[in-house]
Image (cartoon, rainbow, N blue to C red; front, top):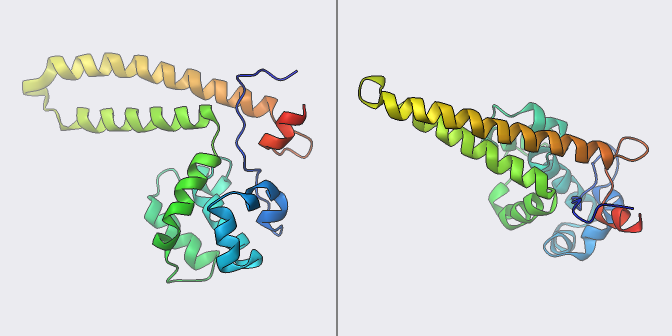
Length: 182
């Protein structure tokens, strides 16, 4: 029996050569995804969703290997090299991207992302403080940063366990629908 606190993302891992909507059939009935299909057609909307998956989904190998790249850099690369559209208008899909970011992440993935942002912001703030006038504050921040990093690692470990426990045959993650069937 599944733990009631276990959270699953609604989006399954996308594989090259397969239509996004064939893999994630349930999303076709949700707004704004169904609107995209109506506007762009099933084939083109699938390519757009795969491009969004590559940039914004935590299960995407492209997203995971591009942690040091900005969102704009990733959008440019995917538009030019995957969609083959140098002038692809990402802003046209802002609402869709926001919805996807929410729907494609489990609770723990969202928590981990929050902690990553917090840790990076604290680090950037620490770097602005001069040692000669802010030594006490910097020392205090370094001590608390270490404690926060431990919390971050704890969440990361929980996420890894969640992913390991939710992996099915073929090394894919169960969708929300599959999790309900268990």
